[in-house]
Image 1 (cartoon, rainbow, N blue to C red):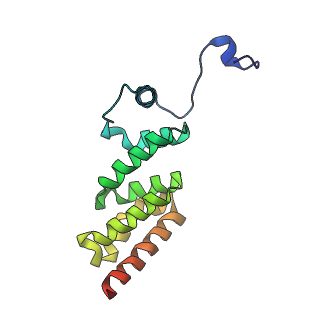
Image 2 (image 1 turned 90 degrees about the vertical axis):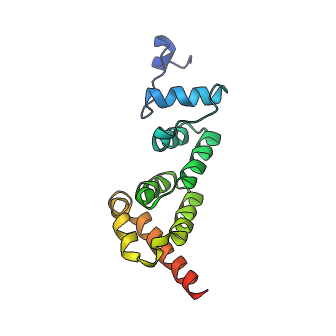
Image 3 (image 1 turned 30 degrees about the vertical axis):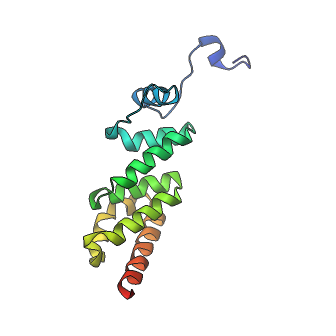
Length: 141
């Protein structure tokens, strides 16, 4: 911190777009103080961990998101997968939809994905297309 940056004189480093509560959780994780990760902040912590390049924490949260997928969380998780450019999470969404009881109703998928179509249209359309392809394969088998 000696390159003339404002942090060198103020002794404060400001990290944009990461909430203080998320930063505390991330630091606790890094220093081994935190074993159980709070689920109520999954989405914001995944984004913060990605932004700060704390890959191990991000992957741990992505795994939790995959395990807790519901049809109601599908769109929100799809938007997150798009923001992270996370192919594994995308694939988990397709597999989840394929296994879901409502899989025979593509209109329900589209209705649930409506928020994702607004926030991440290209990704959401690709995801819907992948879901429909997966369902067609399942029906043929």
